[in-house]
Amino acid sequence: MQGLLLRQLRRLGLDRETPPADVAAWQAFLARVDRAYTDFEDERYTRERSMELVTSEMQDLYASVRIEHERLQELITYLGIGLISVDDRCRIRVANPDARQMLGWDEGDFADECVFTRLDVTGADGTPIALDEVVRTGTATRGVDASFLTRTGERLPVAFVLNSVEKDGRVLGAYLVFNDIRQRKQTEAQMRHARELAEQASRSKSEFVATMSHELGTPLNGVIGMLELLSDSDLDSSQHELLGAAKRSARTLAVIVQDVLDFSRLESGQLLLEPRPTDLRTLAHETLEQSRSAAAAKGITLELDWRAGDLPAALADSARLGQVLHNLVSNAVKFTAKGGVTLTIERAREHESLLDVRFAVRDTGPGIKPELQERLFEKFWQEDGSYSRRHGGTGLGLAICKRLVEAMEGRIGALSAPGEGSTFWFEVSLVRVAPQTESAAPEADDDGPLALDGVRVLVVEDTPVNQKITMRLLERLGCDVELACDGREAFASFRAATFDLVLMDCQMPGMDGYETTTVIRGLEGGRSHVPIVALTANTQPSDRERCAAAGMDDFLAKPIQVRELHRVLRRWLVRRAA
Ligand code: ADP
Image (cartoon, rainbow, N blue to C red):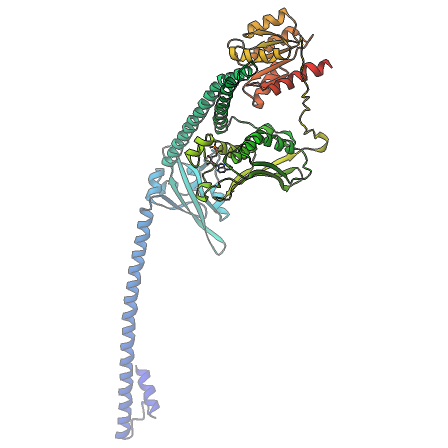
């Protein structure tokens, strides 16, 4: 203050020793003093005001920091999941109440040690998880299912996230967030159990349906076989007509039973494909032949548009591929009143070992409304019940096609518009047959007359209807047939007489066909070998293997197709004799 006064005096040309010379000098001096005082007061006021403002701001800031802190504390406390904060050496800094409650540990329990060691972190598969390593490397671990050791020694199933905290390239620590997943695990186990039960139920249902259709199939085949034999007898024209109607109904019923059987096999995963070298052009012709008379009866055309050029042979399950084709072609013929049906076959793509082939069946039928097209491949779906009454069918055909094509790892679809016909197409990827092993042509069937006069055949069959059919078919060829109704009788007959061939039913009560064959082979002791041909409705590769393992030489699917029977007889009786 004194210094300031002296500076003011000096500015006026005064000092301690030189007082103002006159009144004017005094007045100027006092005016300056007054101004300086006023300035000083102003400044003091401003400073005090700023101080007040700063203090109040500081107080506000402090208050909001306190609120934030409380909120954070609340958040951590009421988070509902466990939160543990650790330092760079994985020592616990904070554990929220949820973490403490879930684990039973207190923050103090871990004192100076790595919290993860105490928690003995173990993955869902039982292997230890080194979380200290995650922290050390400053990385993170997300959504891991694991278990932590609680204070009582139990293992608590948890899902956790561990995030390291880094600053300026230095790891400061990490946050472990975890949740008790006992409930979830329990629900998952219940769901798994429920799914297994549902799958089991579905399998049982499919097995039941498969068994039922199989059981229905046996007498039905008997009916068809008997009707076939009846058509060879002397009948007048009206009896022929009645017989024709009975045959048609029986065949329709057989198709339905076969559809249901196929579908339930596909559903229960029992249907296995048997890829063999296949000539697709022959298959296409054969398929069209099956619908030829139906198309001719309606006066519509049925054509093959072969665009695949010189197609190499490929591995395909010709029976199943033919089934899909036949389904599409027969549907097209069924729904087309005028115009025609064309089957187009072309190469879609070609790779070194694979051949993608596209099949399309185009018709000039009524077409299908766009909104209905999506449902076409659903089981038991038919656009209009009256169609099925008029045309027959189960609504299973396309569902079976879809599943078969998918089993061949292919795709299937339909393009259609009302009034413009429909095109049903599918694409499958077939394995090409290497040229040296190419033997696609089906075994040449010598269709000449088959005469087996005096050839001795033992038929082993327990079902009376099947006995009659098989024996009549063989007798018509001139065979000398002997019947055995079960395995024991077969063995006795075999020991007592000599046979050129044995037809062996596989499923028989008591000693079945497999066991009987094994016993017969034992009796032969390798000194002789009479061909034994299995008769069975189970035609999966595993069934064939079982027949071969029992010592059988060949295989005939039931119901016996005359053509197949002739093929087998030629193979074992005519060619061998030649
Ligand atoms: P279905 O045994 O009834 O023929 P599908 O599964 O083969 O069973 O066919 C289901 C339905 O799809 C048929 O009932 C019919 O409504 C429709 N459909 C199938 N093919 C054709 C087609 N070429 N033209 C018109 N509609 C068709």
